[in-house]
Image 1 (tube, rainbow, N blue to C red):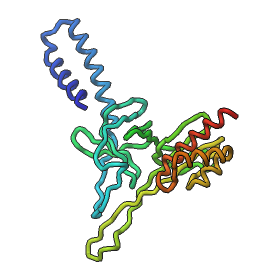
Image 2 (cartoon, rainbow, N blue to C red; image 1 turned 30 degrees about the vertical axis):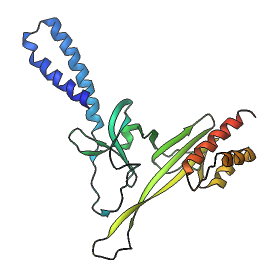
Image 3 (cartoon, rainbow, N blue to C red; image 1 turned 120 degrees about the vertical axis):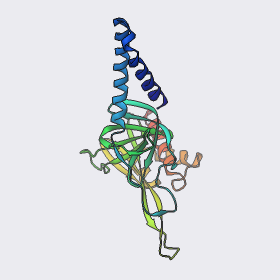
Length: 241
């Protein structure tokens, strides 16, 4: 963003100097002006979403992925990649939020975003297709994309009212649920525990059980790590068939 504002200041200065320049110099300035307009129009499209409306409830925790604060992530919009964009993911309303230069919280339009990368995760909007078992539309984490499998993670925050304190003003909190979907042979399978994971993968069950034990993987403790590591190990074993 700092680069964008510096470019703007330089452009204003250059245009102010136009009367004193010769034709050649003006052509160079016009070239810089065209470059600036390309950058400016790109950022204008990026901030064309709607302002995020704050929640009015009294909250005990926040609804965002990992942290409530913005993370300088990577964002692709209409094929243009923007590095170091302040971004966060609202898991309650399933919205990607960016911070505009005038400090507005902007909810991005799903159809405009190719992907976002924050905290090392690749996030994209999935549109339902005709494949069996396809999960509902929304933002998903692409955990793994290999030759044989596509592993997706869906995070959802649900709001509940805190019933432990009886007063006129209730407090509310968010509870996070995680779902995994494995695309295999043109069909999606929902993964809910270790048993469904091994059942979906079908082969090499004995080797995978040994792998799970050797690496001390537990679905209830860290479902994301277990699902990812087991799927990758199954792909590795399948190469030697």
